[in-house]
Length: 181
Image 1 (cartoon, rainbow, N blue to C red):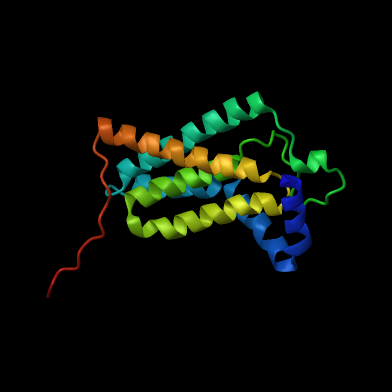
Image 2: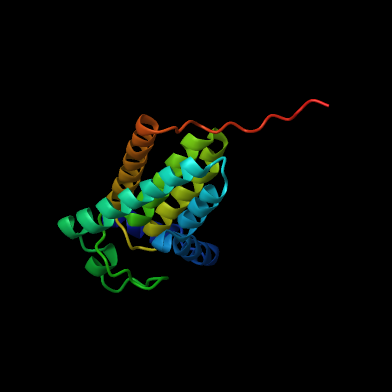
């Protein structure tokens, strides 16, 4: 059933624009480039520094457990390996398929950003969803890899935020109010 869904995407959604867009989006997630950049910005700002620590800790926990524990343990081959002949738009990833690291890190990052400032939730989760879908579009993950990665990312981020809140000060940052003239 999962292969049928991936093939449906290939047959019905492929277009020159998306063939350009989704490799770009997935590139932003390679090695957590976009998320590490956002984490660095949070650390630079005194107002958001504690959230920056939680943000980076969430990414670290997600990478550690997803990439270095679950992937080798499950050892699921990627869809393009089991369906030889599929033309890939990106270089073939060398690691196993389950769970999707791009999805896990993206949803971990989006969850922390949403907890930090409510106004950041929509753009953060939109980017996370695009990143996750890009992995399906590019035929490098099964849908259950992406859904499991997203779920693990959210779970690990909530756990890290809870730990930071429990053992330190971590409260949502409210936008600055404009001073009346």
